Image 1 (cartoon, rainbow, N blue to C red):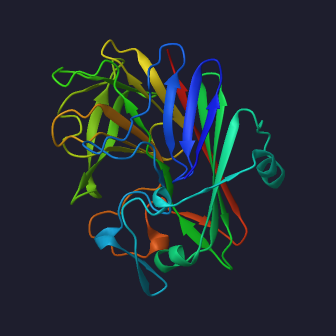
Image 2 (image 1 turned 90 degrees about the horizontal axis):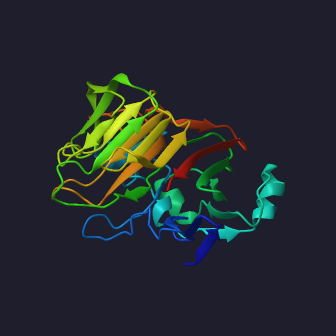
Image 3 (image 1 turned 30 degrees about the horizontal axis):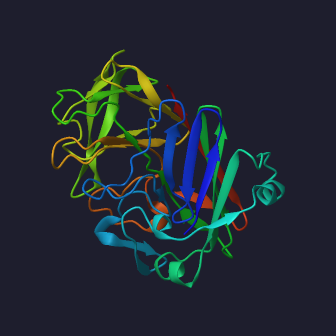
Length: 305
C-alpha cells in the first residue's frame, strides 16, 4: 500500500493505492481536515469507490446468464490494491490533458479472484486532479471482456462537520441546486431501496441535519439533483459536490446519535429494490459497454474556506 500526495497553496490531498481511496483533504491555511479520518467506532472508511455495484444485491447474490455470483455491499474495488500509474501515460491512452504536477492516477484490473464473483474483464482507472480549491475525481471503465459488460460505479466520500457538537440540536444543513418538493427514495430491509417514495419540501435554508435525519438510513434522490452542499450551523457552505450522476445518496451512521461526519455520494447505480428477482443486466441504473468501449465520468468537490 502506497500513499500519494497532491498539494497547492490552498489544499493538501492524500490518497492510497489501497482502494484508490482518498485519505485526507486539509486546508493549508486553517489546518481544517475536510475528510473523515476513518475511526472504526463510527465508520472505518473515508472515501471508498463503489464498483461494480452500488449498495446491495438482493440476498447477496447476483444472477447473470443462469449463474449466481456472491457480491457484498458496494462491490470489491474498495478492498483491492490499485496500481499507481504515470499520468502522462494515461493522457496518451485516453487523450486527456492532465498535468503531472496536479493529478495522480490509479489502475485496477480484473483478475482470477474478481472473475469468481463478477464474470467480466475490465480496467478501472481513478484520477484525482487538484485545481485551486477544487478536486476533480475522474472514473474510466474499459470493457476488456470478449462481449458485453455491465456495472455500476459510485462515490462515498465522508466530510467532517465543522465545530462538531454531539449535543447540538442541529449539526449543520444540506443545500441543493433545487428547491421545492423533491421525491425521496427510502431504504428498507437493511439497505435495499423501497418501492415507496416520500416527498420532501426544500426551501432556501436547505435541510437541517438533526439526530433524526439519517435514522432511517441513507436519503436517496433519483434524477433530481446535480449539486449538494454541506453547510455549517450558520448555513454557510464549506463543501459542495457537483456531478452528473443520476442518483445521489446522503448518509451518516445514526445508531448512537450523531456521527462526526456526513457522506455525499454520487452514484451511477443504486441497490436492488426489495425482493428484486431480475438478472444483473436488469438492475436499476445499470451501465452497459460493448467490447472495448469506454465509460468516462467525473464529479467535483469544491472546498470553501
